[in-house]
Image 1 (cartoon, helix red, strand yellow):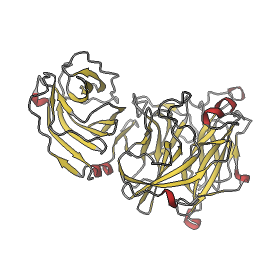
Image 2 (spheres, helix red, strand yellow):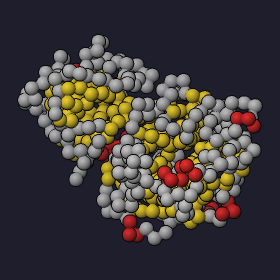
Image 3 (spheres, rainbow, N blue to C red):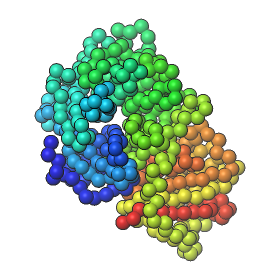
Image 4 (cartoon, rainbow, N blue to C red):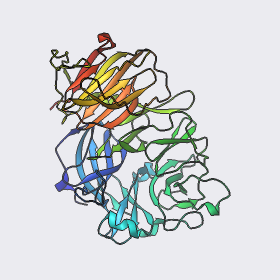
Length: 467
């Protein structure tokens, strides 16, 4: 496809969303020969349409691409694939041909959502199933749809023929062939075991011609995000960040016993593994509940018990391009609850705020205040048990802390914390572990909560991107 007219010179740091070509939904990534490639489902935003929830697209009708030299600073490349008329486009992923050393071919999949209608929301009530279709490329920029003979449809022996058949991710096998995992709808009546709900299973020798296999045993429930081998175990992500683990690629996939959701109480959705990332797999998602953005990449930590958690990716330190002095402002707010920092953060850019915290043994609030004006704001509070994200008046009254996120870790009395902020998004880290990923309402003024002990929050450093 000719994408030249869509290539953008604008650089977006950390959080990426496309420009005039439409919105963003599911994402997947690839790294090759020094460059990062971020693919995503795209289409026109669904603004002012009563059928469409805030932040959703009116139509999923194409795949688009953004590229980066460092995995942090992105620019839009443009459209690389479109679905046929009267269909909608389901999510995809990317992998190498099993004969990549010879043919240098990448394979990407998408699905066609059948049902007559002018857009996705009209298709829903006429849903007639999905097929998975494949694209190939040798340069990751220009993609060619393969012959329809390779179209992969639902296998009625074990799956609903007019059910979901979408969003394929693959794992290589020792013999060079591939396993595929994807969103599908098993038919329980055909099985004598409990199957993973909404997950399909298949195999292929060449990455293009696929054979459906019986559904995997397990306890998943929801859309499949992705699959990754880490050590000797197999980690599957479902929906809004739930984690399921197996000792074999054929399952059973059981819920992770600790930290069962890598995102938790979050505005981000659909965690997926970035398989070819330099240095090992990363994870990425996208933000809902407003203008959609791809999230910054997260590193993966698996402890001695085999528990997976997300952590700050060191590559994101490239957001810390310019340090900004951050002394406390004069006591002019009239609040005994908050000490404001002097700089106002212009949130069109990405900001990183780091500090060391002494966590009290009691429930004395300690953390950061995000001013939203009119005498109110939001609070990021840290305790020895975990973090909360809530709301409060400027004078400390009417506080609502929100859900407690623990990550099943014991923090102890001293921690290092990090806030990553841009637009209306905030990500919160403790000792490099991802805690909250939230939408916020902040006018750029932030302060420290913990006035009862001024030393509770110290060594505050603030950085932003160069602009």
